[in-house]
Structure formats: C-alpha cells, structure tokens
Length: 80
Image 1: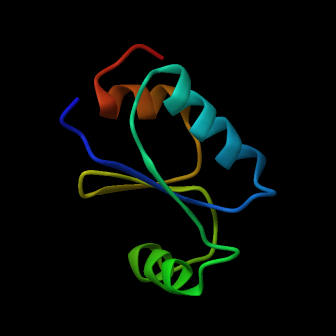
Image 2: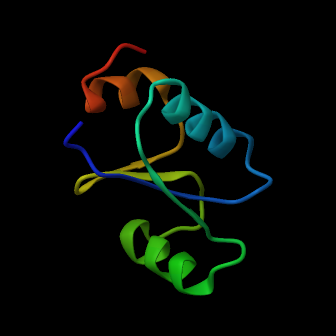
C-alpha cells in the first residue's frame, strides 16, 4: 500500500478505537498519536483541523475528521 495513514486520537475515544481496529483488520499500516498525552501532536492536530475533535485521520495529505468506515475504505482503495 502506498498510502501513508496517520491517526490522532485519545485513549477514551470509542471512534478512535474503531478506526484503529479497522486499520488493523484491513492490514493498513498507520501511525497513531495520543493527543491527550502529547501536547505537540495535539497542537499539530489543531493546526490541521482548527478543532479538538478526534479521531483525525490523515491519508497522505487528505484530512478526515471522525470515523466513517465506507469513506475510509474508499480513500484507501479497499473493501469496507
């Protein structure tokens, strides 16, 4: 897979866990940042989106806020 996937999340976010489980289930490598514990990554995420809502998922340079299985699958070119 030639897509670089990054997820900004918090440990208590149900949708963040669902997104990470989806990536794992579909064998999509991803980089995860815990914005509850990492102030620099939290600031980076706010700079990308202008808000604190998680998950924030970046696929290459495209930013998605929230977890939408169908939309993620389409962006990744895989089956949902």
